[in-house]
Image (tube, rainbow, N blue to C red):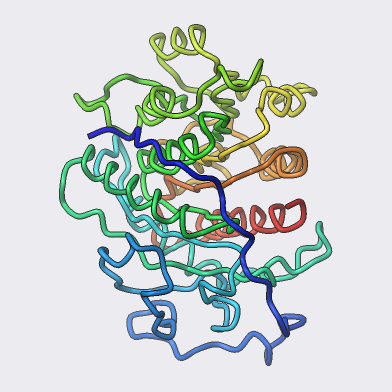
Amino acid sequence: MSLLRPRAGRRGPAAAGLDGRPGRNDAVQRRRLPARAGGLLPRLPALNEADLPRGLAEHAWTDRRNFLDLPPELSRWDAAGAVILPIPYEATTSWGTGTREGPAAIIEASRYIEWYDEELDREPYEVGVCTLPSIDLGTVGPEPAIARLRALYDDLLEAAGDRFIIGLGGEHSISSAPACAWADRLGGDLTILQFDAHTDLRDRHHDSPWNHACVMRRVLEHGPDGGNRGNAADIVAVGIRALTREERDVIRDHRIEVVFAHEMRRPGWIERAAEALGENVYITFDVDFFDPSLMPATGTPEPGGGSWWDALDLLSRVFGERNVVGADIVELAPRQGEEASAFTAAKLAYKMIGFWSEYR
């Protein structure tokens, strides 16, 4: 199976606007629905499957959860400018496990985010945020699982129009599906902005080309087409501090701009990363970009990582200067009793929605 599935067409019309938006998220306006047993998030009102992307009807709609715990009028598909897609897929982790629990932990933590963003002086939730059902990719091997996810993303992007979709992993191997789907829709005119501790450019790992450590190699093969973008890179990777000699050679032989973590200690790295991007950008954010002191709950932590403000300073510039078409946040492996990591990932997703709504 191939990730390369050319599809015609471009992004559709803008999502419908909202009427009667609520104000501040005080105790009255931010009302809670009754909680489900077992500490799970409130169950959303039944959605009309006919109103949702065709491919989603084939997947198990279990434990439906709501990012930010929004009321129905702000979380319906037809009222949302942003979309959260939980993808609890884990099949090729190399060290620590638990990424399958990442989406649920992020959505649970999002209940405690303050809706007002002091940096933007606005409440980004007002664009509406629809949380889609968790995607069950089944028990098939990694290659057919990712091909299935790619087919779903093709349908989802067709239906979404100008909605901003954030996929929540799950391991990093899932990122090849949305990245390549977007590359095809844009005729290859796309740069991948990768926040990561690792380059993930191995050809094979643990005898599999679909391992999470190979995801950017697969994206490089099936995704962006540098011939359409002048001097822009195919991949811009920031925060890198662990790679093999093979991966170093791949970087030298391809249109890849890398900002190593040690280079982030000096001024100018944000300008360098931003200037290497093409007009259209897809963001894949592996949470091990962050230093383990900020993000301990990940499967392959590396010391010397980026800070919260490193990430936000670059994200703000990229959203402000480029057309960011979508994003994913991957590799959170929640730990019992340690809530800060999941909250950080949830806040990161909300900041992306805020930047997107501010600069679109």
